[in-house]
Length: 208
Length: 208
DNA sequence: TTATTTACTTAACGATGTAAAGTTAATTAA
DNA sequence: TTAATTAACTTTACATCGTTAAGTAAATAA
Image (cartoon, each protein chain N blue to C red):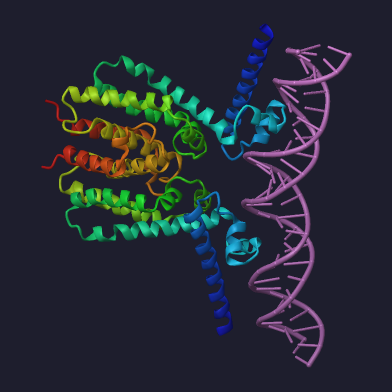
């Protein structure tokens, strides 16, 4: 049975090679420059070989997209040791925008590009996305059990908080604010706006 | 000189025809299906004619993108008569998300697609974008002069508020939340989250 | 009447995603 | 040991894309 095992190993190896090449090209040259042919060139296989390992181009990017959520989860890991949920929530906002700014292309793929979504639509569940969101949701719930955000729906509030930080990163990454903000304000706008969100959370809470 | 005038008129007419066709295709079939060839087919001209009126494909979408901002400004028009700036700010949030949800493809083009930005980068100023943002900025400043948002930077706060509502619309339009929210929460999530933002603004304000 | 300009088209290039058919080597069955 | 089968990969091909360069025919100017 060792022969079959070797083959299995080799299949996984090539799949990984494809993904590595795709990731490198994607991070270096962006989505548009990452074609099936470019990926194939880089690993010295014919373009159509890739279709033996992935359904289509979107499926390749779906795999990278999944990696992104794993990495985001890594970023969030240290926060698990912050016991005060309100502090954790505020720290989470900062970690989130930091992740986005340090991995802009990847963030874009995770949250704004259409590519991986067609592939995701076919899957039934989405563990990686759930994991990240549930960490936020859990934190919000703990805040509420300590008297914060009284009378608000935890899930809706989580979505709203997520929207806030996502909006900050997304406007910046997609370059919609450069022409509209003053030069001084634009510098470091993401961290300024994140601090603003934190302050808004601080000011609004009604702790009993 | 009437002959030159007629020619001028005809040029504008064809330019408009191109844009109308592009808009129709874009709204009906999305960005990917809107090719130069498809646009040309629809108006019964050869594809290359379009290049006599627009620099490249991005330039066509830049024009549509501009139209979008004009339309958004239309949506905001009635708010000019709301004298209380804090009420105006809250109404603006709702108007913004309504605009986005009623014009999802256009909103996407305005705030997330890369296409129009390459063309925009070459322009020096961006009146349409400025107009919309300044309406928000002006409102925030008026709020402050009435004692709201004490000690906060108006421009940064405007960007943050914009981020909040943009984040809400963008996550929904790009379909990143369907798989992650419960069915009940997902229904009408945009208006729920917008209401949440309004409530957050309400709760945080420290009016003297 | 001839020359020039304007408005448009035809033809072509290099690139894309992907399907179908072909090939070669490894494995299994006889 | 040999023939048949399967697995892994490639070659070829198609339709489409954005865009450039060269051509054409009609309108205008000289």
